[in-house]
Image (cartoon, rainbow, N blue to C red; front, side, top):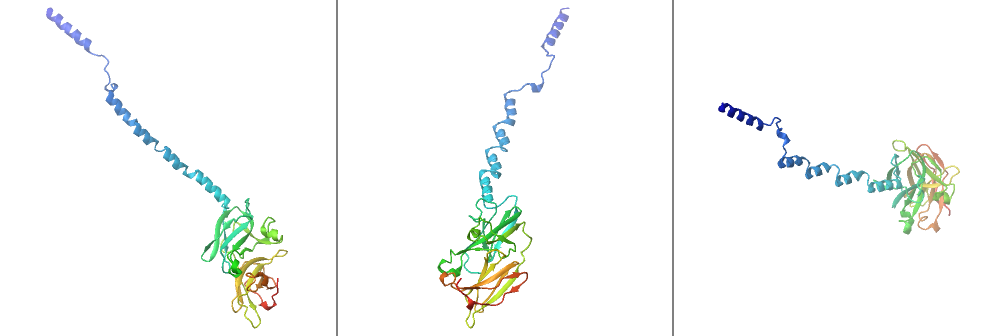
Length: 298
């Protein structure tokens, strides 16, 4: 009897010490576990995550639209480079020695039209050229060419307006142009944008000066564009050799040649000249011989 009571008591004590609801193993989180979890989101990880948007990356992203680019774009606009424009180019091959610079002035829709150059040409392989962009349209213009060895002491600064020899389109200069201010009937070349593909069509134009029994060497053959009801404008110049021959390439149009004595530019007071009749060019053309002995003071 006493033995059964003792056994029953032992069984009851064992039942009271057992927990009917076991605790899951992962429900206990000690200090080590906390540090382990934070390893996935510590400061180094945060900085790594911010690498895609930190200060250095923001500055990098702004490279495409920072102040320098905006100012560059504004400068391009001021220089005539139109972002949504079409490519165009200017070329000039003067036949006289001593050219120092070639600039294009014209009506290009800018506030400084005709007061500052639209483009400055660079000399490449004997040809002065410049490239840019313009919106489709028509643009009257003229070259400003500085330098002519025939001008003597003033050769480096001697400047003249030049009609584009290879542009067949021509018209009266705008009233705000320096040419029109000198003569309201002055002619300007007209650029059409878009430009035609390929090189412009041109013709070889030649002639000869005679001087009786003397040599015409050194005389200046000045070619001028002569449009109806418009003032003649300089196109090109050649210094003739002992045989008096000259030759240039020109676009279709009405032209004449004027013979100036060798010192006409260096000593204007001595200037003498004689002009040919004008001719319309639509093919290679040879002008009739021009007798320089008939030259008179202008």
